[in-house]
Image 1: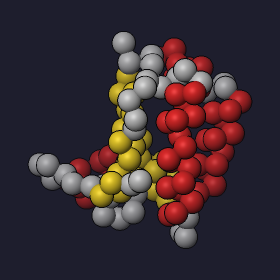
Image 2: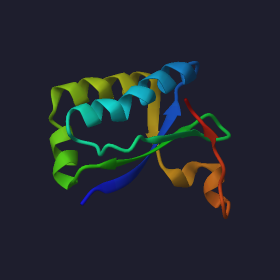
Image 3: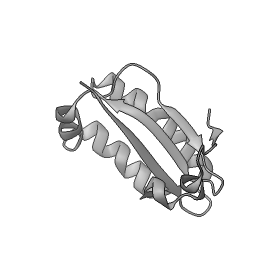
Length: 105
């Protein structure tokens, strides 16, 4: 059984577009390695330019494998260059009954 996650990426100053490019490659890369399930990720932008990504890992084992896979580690280095990780609770939208986000494509 898969595990759905909500990833929150806060872009560093001036890195908004670079972050979007990396996020668009994130789940396809995980899928190509057999770590994420086939459905595409849902990638959204909050009102403060934070990117929210919802996707499904194949399993808890896949998450563990990702933490030592060289391709994934290299990709995560790229994320660290352009963003900081956050939580959904840090977003203004988290206080809304039905939060809305702009799609990222």
